[in-house]
Image (cartoon, rainbow, N blue to C red; front, side, top):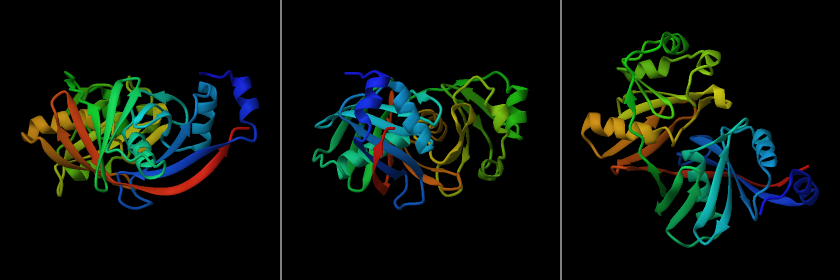
Length: 275
């Protein structure tokens, strides 16, 4: 059941909604990527969800409806709804497992891109996501090189651009022009290179979606895992995202699917009132 905006605002005035903030792809707070998680009894209007996400001002807020291991799940940045988000899915699974008392080992999420899964093994939660095989671009647009400040060795495209560099230090030194990146025909730009103490490293920039740099981007690994699995001839990989907060991801190439594993840590429990 969907409420009208007016009804929702009227009915929710003074009604508190549970809310959690979880640091995903980190084993302690102040690392990884913080996500908002808001369990709902029924869907609120999109405009209300957008306002909550904008107020939270995190790269994504996850909203879900359901119980007993089966949920409908959506994600919003401060400005738009996105079709796939890894860290907020991990955060939502953490809340269901650890805060809402769900005793099962697996969770099913119905989303805009189909069925997603989450399974726990000790402290690690592994997401079952689609694999996106990137198509090679015949040339690197001048706007891409200008926006990144470096010329990638190779460029590919799925939902996002995948810019491949030669060394980890090139990824660390990137200082992209957010305004120029926002004009590119993609949700975001993944920059990646071989890692010095892991299989590969990455950073993710999506200023057009209200996220200048995402601390850790699970959905980018739907593209990264197939690429690096083929290049390194490995099915099991360990990755790092080199944002200021940083994050670690345990990756598996499963053919048409990928496994994206990580830890999570609860930062806060709260109650929201929609004005």
